[in-house]
Amino acid sequence: MYQKLKDLALSSGASAFGVGTIDDLRHHFDALPLEQTEGLKFGISIAVRVSDPVLKGIIDRPTRHYLHHYKMLNQLLDQAALRISIAVSEEGYNAMPIPASQIVDWQAQTAHLSHKMIALRAGTGWIGRNNLLVHPKFGSRIRITSVLTDMPLETDKPLESGCGECRRCISACPVSAIRESSKDWDRAACLEKLKFFAKEYNIGQYICGLCVKACAPV
Image: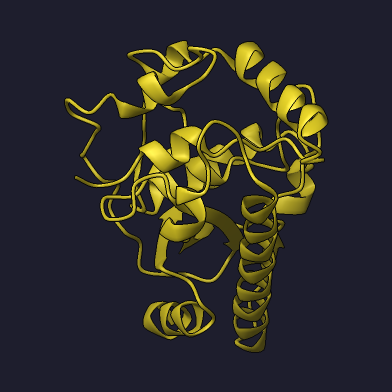
């Protein structure tokens, strides 16, 4: 079923697909009761790349064009996750598609779970200095979502790569929220800038895109 689900994801518009074991992560899914995820030991990670030409339009702030593209990618991911969940269910197993971008706690900027942590387990990428997932081919120019399931699936190995000498995201951040280590990322400074962009430029959503644009393979 691994290859069948991967083919389904790619035919739905996804750019990357992976599977990892996540049973030990369930305690970190703050917005999902343990009872709800019981038995769902596998996490399917789906990624879709962001358009390079759209990102080129981001000079010093997010654009309405980027906002629309961002929303469309999230819808595509949600549809792909739904199709995969239906395919899993038809085989007699349980599957839970997780919204690609649904904030549960706006101040903390957290969702139902961390798609990044599942993507790490699924070998989709690594956590960069910008605290975003970095794909080896697309950089941080991706959006991701997840499907939890109890279907026994072949799993991928986490990548052992990293950002190396690249520090472009550090210089791209307008509030110096990005540091040498992702652990030192200044969440508060980043959030305040997102709020500023949303209000000052009529974006209406907490997005930026500057470090996403900066993070691309050389």
